[in-house]
Length: 113
Length: 116
Image (tube, rainbow over all chains, first blue to last red; front, side, top):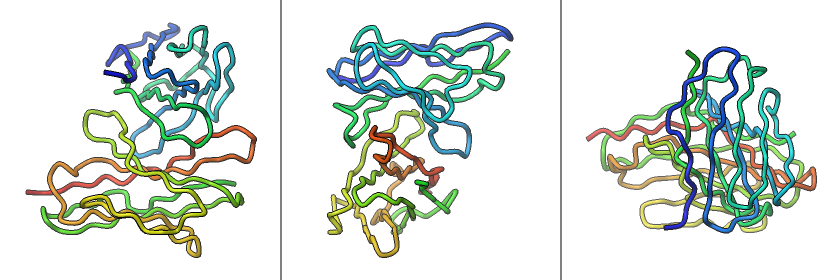
């Protein structure tokens, strides 16, 4: 079945540590996105990529980094510079970036030890 | 600036009741898209509907219906004869094309609890 796979489902970060969240899609979608969801808040865009080897900062990119070396993969690294990383992280994709519906993964819950 | 407001934080209804989730948006664009997504307890958001700004016809899909009114900048979602499986967080979203790229602006969501 086609879809988006995020791993791990739960992740714990120690202070000063970088951690990487995985996102893989087999939908052949061009565009991929990372969102952060905090309790009682909407989804906030961290980074997005419209094409391989290209990505743009979203509204809350500070303390995060991404890469898009393959069409299928869009990993997110939460760096030690992100002082409040505890949140639910959602990866999404769309056929293109032109107002298409988003397909979401099942999310990664990141917590700080 | 673009904005989506879902004023209802949480709604509780008894099974078989009808319920309407409100969504009010702000945009300067003349062309835009509106979306509704459902987030069940599993966490994955599921697409429900997309509507463009030129199509103000209401839409019905089974027990779901959507009322789009440009005059009041609203895109409300009604569930008829609610069921326990409808319990989830529902998000309204607006596509932003002002920057030349397409970003989605989400509301804060409405948590719907349907009690048996």
